[in-house]
Amino acid sequence: MFEIGSSLKEARLRQGLDFPEIETGTKIRGKYLNALEEERFDVLPGETYIKGFLRTYAEYLGLDGQLYVDEFNSRYVAPDESEMQTIRVRRTAQARRHRRVQGGVLIAALVGIAVVTALVIVAWTSGSAPDQPVAGISSNGSTQQKKHKRAQPQSAKAHITLRAVRTNVSLLAVRKGGPTGKILLENVELAPGEAKHFTRRSLWINTGTPGNLRVVVNGKRVNYPGGKPQAFIVSARGIIAPA
Image (cartoon, one colour):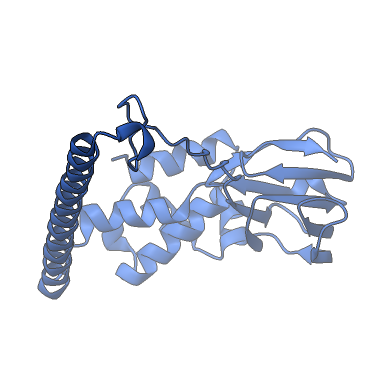
């Protein structure tokens, strides 16, 4: 749990932004932005507007807009009875499935133990145990352990947002993975406040005005060196490397 208004204000002050500038970029009136920071939600037109303004304002500051909407819902929006009933029914069904799975696993384990025990007894009484291998049992009576290859973890996908701030972002090109990857954007211009969203493991980005481009990875703003036209790669870890 965190304070919605104070975290928005801290992010704004940390970036040296004023309400008139943010109002231009987000199209949200300054008095509403101030009300969000002071958590005076009664000043805003309605619940739908509050959630929309929260999401837009947070993402403009490079924060996770959905996180702020979820926090608002948990603190100020009471779920209706039908929603609560749906949640209770879903949890009950999940508990039943869990019990059925546990029961099935237990029965399968008992059956497996019984089968192995019967095979061991038959092999022992026949007097030819070394010549009659039993599944899972070695000739000296020790259990054979199967080695399983561990699945190699794959790089996680990242939620990457490219947003124009202050003035237009010009000559923006985006490719999948690297400079020879699939073209996602080519020579695009973004107006202040306009954003493009991607879900990829990595992106290759080339921009003519990097000072006006804000890059947010998984809700966190990432920085890159230099103010001249440049190309770089944004990875799922939020690391930016020259490319």
